[in-house]
Structures are given as C-alpha cells and as structure tokens.
Image (cartoon, rainbow over all chains, first blue to last red; front, top):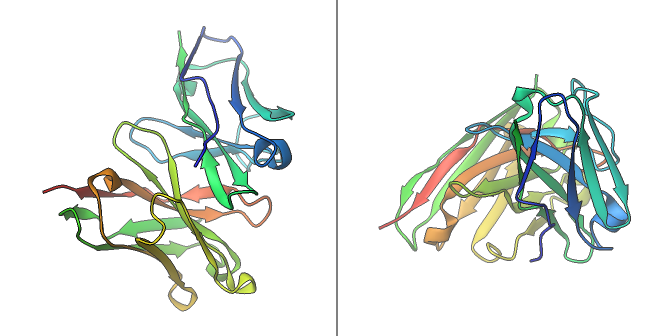
Length: 110
Length: 121
C-alpha cells in the first residue's frame, strides 16, 4: 500500500529553522492532515503534533505543523543539537482504511 | 502516567508463530483504539494493524502485508492488547510497538518500548 513521501535527509545549522515535508494524496494528507513523530536512535517514537496541527502536552512551541493541499509540513525553529533525529509523518488513508507512514526524514543539525 | 509494556518477542523460525502482548496502564484502556506498529532494523515505521474499542464492536484493520497471517485482539478486563502472528516470514523481523491511539484526532499518542521479533532459521 502506498505510503507518504518524505525527503530522506535534511541538514541545517544550529539555531536555524528546518521545514520538513510530507506528501500524500486526497485520501490521506489532503483530507486528514498528518501527525508528526520524532524518533531518536534506540528509542520509541514520540508524537510531536496531531494531524489537526495541535501539539500534545509538553511539546515545545519550536515545533509547529501545517498543511497545504496534499502536503503537510513540520517547522522546527531555533534548531538545537537534541533535535537531531528521524522524523515521520503519519495519517489515516480513508480509501484504503489503513494508517500510512512516511519513509522518514533524518534531520542533521550542523 | 500512561505505560505500555510489550512482551513475547524472540527468535522464531520461518513459518512459525508468536504471540505478543501489551500491558496498558495509566488510562482507561477500554475507551481507546490501539495499534501495533513495527520497525525493521535500520528502517522506517510500518503500521501493522488496529483494534477499535467496544463502541465500534472491537473491529480490526490490518496492513496488506500481514492480513490473513496476523490477528489483533484485546481484553479490556485485563487492559491488554495482543498480536497473534502466524506463518512468519523473514521480512516480519522488526521491533513491534504497541501504541495508544488518541480519541480525537486518532493519532498514536503513546508508545511502548517495543519488543524485538526475529524470524530466522
């Protein structure tokens, strides 16, 4: 089943802003939005943003999500060394009745 | 505090079976959908399937890659989720995570630490 498309890697400098993208179609991102998860090496994923772009309790305001058409975006401002991680998008596909994930983006903070 | 603790992973031969368990605490288990998500070594996340709650008659959904081989069940009286895996293949090798699905929007808000399943001869 088709997944969501994310760039494999993004590199940005310390204290800069990174924008990660996630592209789907009208059956998933286009009508559901996308949730965003962060995963550090050796740890389980952590939800950063719900598909309605709201943050769970305890998540920094430096992480903000948005959507335009079939593409969702996660913007991380004031990059810190601890932001270096893998980032995944996820949502429900209403046509396939499955959850779909993106392939993940590895964010490197230089 | 929400806790999800997976167990039951291990080494199994191709064609074999394994049953994973997820013990939940810190929330009203019966109110929530629950998902299984897996991650092959060095690779990305892959959704395995979902158990809906009692209001949706405990219906389930599965990824195409496991449909017909894996079965998700739950016991609300024990706050537990299960994943019965049959006819295992080498490509099922992964860390398997139990996740609590938020009531709305239905996103995976809490994750267990995962349990490793290795399918190899």
